[in-house]
Image 1 (cartoon, each protein chain N blue to C red):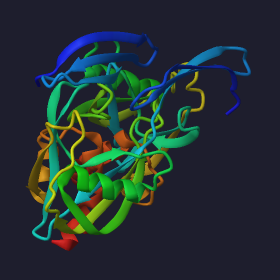
Image 2: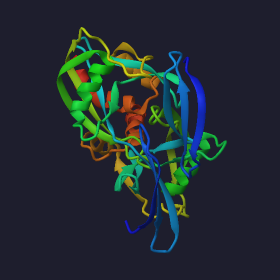
Image 3: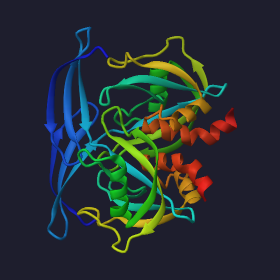
Image 4: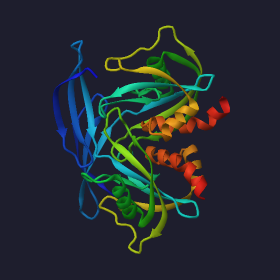
Length: 181
Length: 181
């Protein structure tokens, strides 16, 4: 690209993301402002039990003021390997650990205004931990749901699953799961 | 939810989104900060030609500093009907209009920190406009690509399509397109 960065403002250093405003200039002399939510990225897990059920969580999402059904997921710690993040978040949010992780893809949630990249893993050979979930403050509303895979696909078509990363993860796991179950 | 809003700060009124920081309190007395990117939402179009090709666009995305392949899409104007937005963005970004729109779903891109909801439409019975694309400043880098549907699905699996809404839109259109072509 041929734009030039004239000025960068860091408007907010956040808990989840920072807000950066870049003032850029095109060769024509025209200026533009680009707002960027700088996000550390994260990992999403598609945990599939031997009977073909997917471990999902229901949680209240503050921005949309709704409780929705999602795949377990979480933010990368600084420098963290995405697969480590997937292992950690699976244990914390579901109380299960997996012996096998397979990377399905990585994608950008909203590349028009945010840097967030999510790494998706399918997790199999699952073992329930005796300790259960380890939830952080504000996550108390997380409840575990075991959903047969075909039912989860129907929930997407019927608008009952409305979370982007969950739709992407389930669709990408589809071929493997049909094979696995 | 049983939290109480103590204080709301509007840290930024933006071009694409506003940044809101809510200070909330739980019944335990513990406080939390919730950062919310308030986004107007938008429409995504899966435009399918009679020969089974999907109209896609390649564009430079500033936050990730990459040129990527996406479905056409755009933000809702205040009070705008999502299907109108889909019609408008299809014409502006591709230079085509469609005689038939079918709503596939609506989903949240990042419900953990952003309000953005995207409405996805499949567009068929397409006509190329003589005027071509109508691009805004900063969209000069948009180029049109006709991708056979099966190839687009392969591009998802191979990590060549990395945009969340595009993956969701193509997967949801799959059943209809297989029927249509």
